[in-house]
Amino acid sequence: MARQHGPQRGTQPECNRLATLLFRSLPGGHAGHVTAWTLLLLLGLCSFTSAQTSPEKRPFKLVANTPAFWDLVDRGAKMETMAAGFGFTEGPVWDKSGYLWVSDEVLNKIFRVYPDGHREEMIALGDPDGSTYDRDHRLINTASVLRAIIRLSKDGKSYTVLTDHYQGKRYNSPNDVVPGPDGALYFTDPTLDLPKGEKQETPFQGVYRLDKSGKMQLLTTELSQPNGLAFSPDGKHLYIDDSDKKNIRVYEFHADGTISGGRLFGREDDGTDDGVPDGIRVDKNGNLFVVGPRGIWVWSPAGVHLGTIEVPEQPANLSWGGDDNSLLYITATTSIYKIQTKAHGFVPYD
Image 1: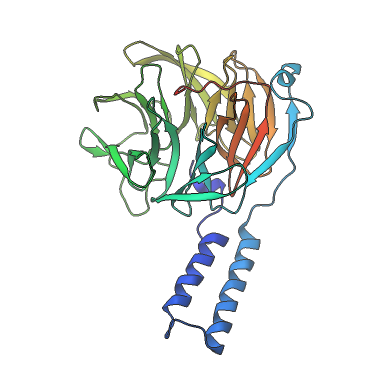
Image 2: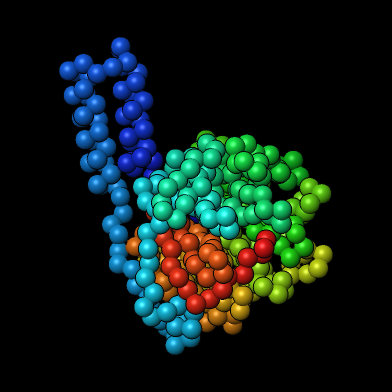
């Protein structure tokens, strides 16, 4: 997701980092009286900037549009903060050994975050975004600054570029990625995070397929800003949302990896600027959990908006996790939240 709906550079983590760099560059490398006061003023300015730019947190709420919503989320369910203090969180992927992969688009790093909130920095990488595991449980990331799809090493300390162009032209800013029923990778390429100062080479916003041999295939260009995507549990449908049009489209998926028959599945436009369609996850019964205005919109397979999980900060993405994939982890602006559901997530790489 583009960060226009989250904090920009200049928020607390980035401001503090710049203050520290400036402090280190001062003559002598240590603080005299003047230098100490200078640093205090810088940090004070950072605190003021943070207070002005940090989004006000709203209350967590469960809003049911139909009684069927309570079949998926308990009326008494609570939302917990797993970790906080990030720049802008994205790309959550749960690992069964007990941690969550998280991208930070402002700090430009990928972390492993543990249930107690402890985080482990894995790699510094310009504007990491959506992530998934492949069938071999290797982390795949859409690296916007690299304008590429990358695969991290097993230790998470290095990466390999899987693809960074189509027909000789660089991608725009790959955004989200999922493995398909055939084991290929499917990803979206909007212009939402096109690096500043770099030109758009691909004259459309596409959805692509990358097979295990490295062959690239363009699936569709009909979405204005394609973002989150997910397959139905039976592998017959591919859902893709459009952040610009604020809707979700569904396609028939075929054995040869192509899609057809795109149609409107649902709209996520409540008349506010409180968020747009972004990350998508599906449960084993085919219900969709989709980022939308104010939180996670829950949809039936028939396209009925069952209700919304309203999140304290505007989310960008989500991941199933826990022992039975019933915990929903949500990356939302500067924090990571989790909520226990009655649903059991469909995880395509399990």
